[in-house]
Structures are given as C-alpha cells and as structure tokens.
Amino acid sequence: MDLSLKNRRALVCGGSQGIGLASAVELAGMGATVTLFARNEERLERAVQSLPMPADQTHDFLVADFDNLPQVTARIGAGLETAGAYHILINNSGGPPGGPITEAHQNEFIIAFSRHLLASQTLVQHLLPGMTSAGFGRIVNIISTSVKQPLKGLGVSNTIRGAVANWAKTLASEIAAHGITVNNVLPGTTATARLEGLLAARSQKSGESEEHHATLMKAAIPLGRFAEPREVAAAVAFLCSPSASYITGINLPVDGGRTGSL
Image 1: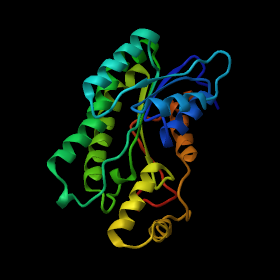
Image 2: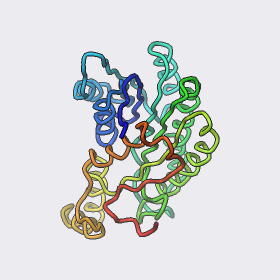
Image 3: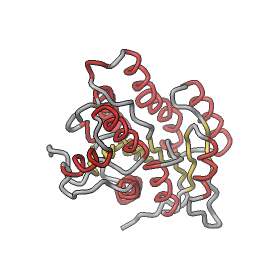
Image 4: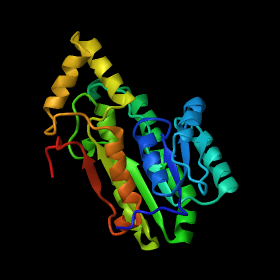
C-alpha cells in the first residue's frame, strides 16, 4: 500500500490543536511538508515544533482568522507566492455554538456559512491551479456526522455542515478528471476542546455534572468511548494518500458506530 506523501505539500486548517494538529502530524509522518493555518500564532508556533521533521522537511504556518475572509485570502495568496503550490488541503475549523435552531439568530448562520463554506471555497479556488498542474490533489473536509443524522441541540451546525457536504460532493464531480479527490471525514464525539465546551454548556444549562453528560454521550456510542484526535486523523491521512486515488465524493464517519444510518 502506497502511503507516501514525499514531495507533497499540505495546508492544514485549524492546525494548531485537536483533529487539525493530529492530521498534520500524520501527514508529516507520511513525508508531506506541512503548513498549519489558524488564528492563534502562539499555539501555531508550538504546534509546528511538534511535527515530525526529517532533514528534507521544513514545516511552517500561516496566521488568519477564518471569520475574516479578506484576511484568509491575503494570507493564502502570500503563502502561495512565497512557497509555491499545495497538493493537499485539509478544511477544518471550529464548529458553531450549540443551541436549538428555533433560538438561533440569523447572524449565527451567516458567520458559520462564511467560516465553513466560503472560507473553504476561497482556499480551493486558490489551491486548485497548483493541484491541476501537478495532476494530484487531495481535499479533505473535516465536518460532522450531522450530515447523515442531525444532532440534537446543534441547529446551526447541522444546517451548515449539510451545506458543506453538498458543496464537497459537487466539487468532487467537477474536478475529478484532474486527478483531484474531494472527501469528507465525519468525526463522532472526539476528545477535543470543542467537546469540553459542549459538556460545560450542557452542565451549566441542566445543573448536572459534566461527567454525567459525558456518560450519557458515551452510552450512545457502540464502542463506548470518545474518539482520540489521532483516530480521526488516521482516516484523514489515508484519504490523502496515493492509495486513496479512486475514492472521491464520500462521507466517511469516524464515530465508533454511533450514526444510525448507512
């Protein structure tokens, strides 16, 4: 099985922590040169030092707030001009706040749509020429199992994640002839800062402990535990490999068997 990404360059969004950083570690370990892209420069500086770095690899990072599209556009433009084309794009950013859809303000949808879909569209349009020229491209969107089964209490997220999944499926069919694949990885409940925030919010609203809510969530997962970021990252990394060259346009749950649909 060919898992080598030697001489490939990867841009990993949300790469300063969680699933993004875990994915960057896997890609670097497979030989890719990695650029981390996130908003917190201090975290990025620490994160880039944690990546596997043989003598022929020099990883770096870009800083931008994904709620600021002009800033994202400027940073990726400068990055391409400085270092050249990318062959791999991992679209990944923090999910919208929780809450029922009936209580969501219009602006919450606008912010989430911009952060998740428009930012991804912007990056694809900038990176696509380089991928097309190389005859090799891997675009992996880290979204949510809610594209298969909406999750309670995540009204805005359910809505926007579904839009991203359909965007990705459309994109996959349009660019497949150039040797570029587009796939979605759907993490289940994963031990990240995002999960910590959700548990804290549920605890505050209900008056019951975070441990209580964690136990309830684990009970809905056949494997009986939360995922580790590296377990989701392994699926991301495989889809970026040469061996995944005939897989495109799919939604791949990595959820411990929780999702109740095929």
